[in-house]
Length: 251
Image (cartoon, rainbow, N blue to C red):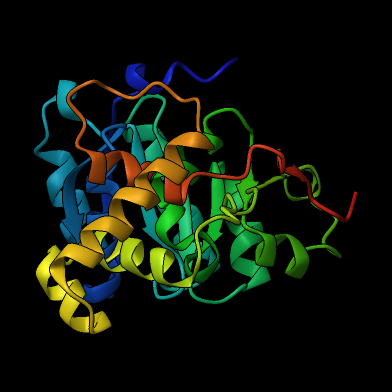
């Protein structure tokens, strides 16, 4: 099944992560992308279930991002994924981890999860990763694919691997730095200029040129009411179209 057009995707997301900073960073990255809307951030399984059990059917999440490292081991992870599928029709569960713990990856695959991402692999591209996974049975990040290469598990063996980040060779050091500060880090231009030791006029010139470069390398049609900063974030974090993903290298 083909992924719907960019503007047609509207996913409700619940985040369950015991790490306060990770949870809020993920929420921030997803907020930049109109295809994903975080409806709840839980810091425990109890909190997650309290939210789900009090949520009207129309507001049930399409996606649950489930931290796997501190959930209580493979059995608890497996049970949680199975219970989520029983409770929410057609929900997709994506597991997140700091480490490539193969027993957890295998438990997630066997329980019916839709993917397993290492946080440092997916990074700013979490929304793109969620959308990419819609077209695949089981999706992993490169480190997970490498760590799981020796496991004889059908879903892991045939897992789709997230592509790399798009490259923009024309984004020179200073232009790239200005875009990182103002777009990815969200700093206002005057603070970014101070950080770089340049004038406000100069950084605005860098940003304008950066936007031009990004637009020249992208033919995606975004919503007309998107701000230039919003479109720039989408373009900077998009997957490389020439790296169309691959199946797990163990195949």
